[in-house]
Length: 146
Length: 368
Image (cartoon, rainbow over all chains, first blue to last red):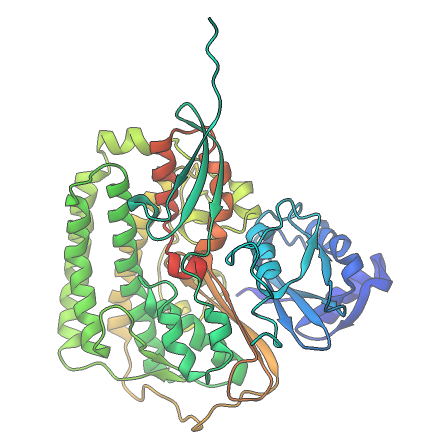
């Protein structure tokens, strides 16, 4: 069985490394500040015992107060998983650091989130719309897009 | 006089027989050698994730049929699994077995198509191998027609079970199919496994190294062909998969040949799982008691299964209303395409086509 790591447990390990990064943690997920997302992702990928070598998926949810980006991480080495989240409170110009340099599997998925939810991924090598055409107005997966 | 050369850009697709749907590759050539490739998506984007937000949980099931339309059963399964996880709904044992039977039949059918079209891409353009594959697939479609009346978009699984129990004539036909299937795979093997043209065209072509496969989030046969023993049926068993004995076939080098071989071997394993499932199939209900309209509690769930093409996952967020607040689909074939650029660079156009074919994409799922 893939063991889902408890958010609180991982949050403790993150707190030893970068305490100000954590917004909240519960049983299912750890939520971190978007400014420190890249450092945390790198920490999760390289720390012995965690070693999240496989990025299962990236997605985003619009909660109206904020936009949330959700990372499902898996370790093929240890067969455990974790949900990492980050938030953007600025709806006009939300941005999150890109993790393509850590997991290249993030490439199309970050483009998809940018396309449909309008979140910019900083330092993404080729941030273009994935499904919709250039010049399309708006981001359809936002809750206020009708 | 000195001859000048310059790179040549060619658009393959969106209307092209080898792109398996409306997919476009913008390929840059130096002579006949690929020097760059950019995939362009979106020609079949229907906004299924957005559509799901305005439908009740049960009404989303037919939408999932239209993702990977060569494996609708497994799409149904991944979605209902995520909803059951979200709302904590139990599933009767018989329904779990029926789901496994349908999933494995679907896997065989889907891999038959994958291998058939792959051989077509290799140049067997008179469709002979493909029609051999259709011969077996037809029997599977007949079985599906018996249980749900449909041959392509099944809409068979329900939250908390399946829509119908199997009819009387289903079991004899299934047993006959499972008994015959291994000898058909042997027949394909005899025709293909040692075929010189196949070996020359696929061995060592389009290698996906182990590290890149993991880093690029590849899944399914593409990941396993690169030598990684990772199958969600074993690593994170769902339904009743932990009760069956089966192997995870893997490749050695991750070339096009390995991806083809892994699919052939997986068909044998699926037939083996089917044998065991038929033997163990319990009697009883196929649908648990459900409220008229489902309101899952506020929360989120990620349900994933091993679909024929890789890890298919549904991430659902509920706000306690009758429709999902957010429904994200982790589409295996979109993500498997991430490494395509690295795999085709340095190969000729004809090789690029079979490398692409060996990933086995379905545009309904890539574009959603």
